[in-house]
Length: 150
Image (cartoon, rainbow, N blue to C red; front, side, top):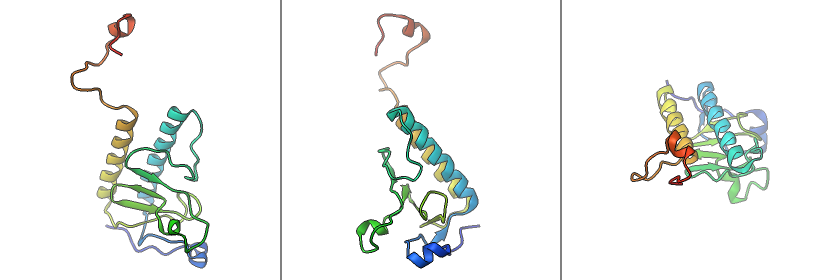
């Protein structure tokens, strides 16, 4: 089963906010919420301040694009840009994340899970980059030593 075509809520329809072609199914919204929560956690660890839940600040994580809902002129180039991009999925929302969610892909539940797994892997690799192949991981003994390789 793939996503159905998106029908915007009244406010989106009246004010002409751009939408994706397909509705984001509830299970995909749940997966997105977890990715969004993880971005916020990583942002907190790096910046020591809250990530804006409305997406008005780019968390600057490679391969992820975050943009706030555009409330300016419909003629501005920003008006057509998606709010969230990872991989092939371009996700849009109305005013704030998880409201009026639409996207550019019509995926099966399994395809959304593959997207989710890849997104989470990318976030964890960003947060914990691998050590170079020639550098051993520290052990407890190394941490107690004065001569750490780090």
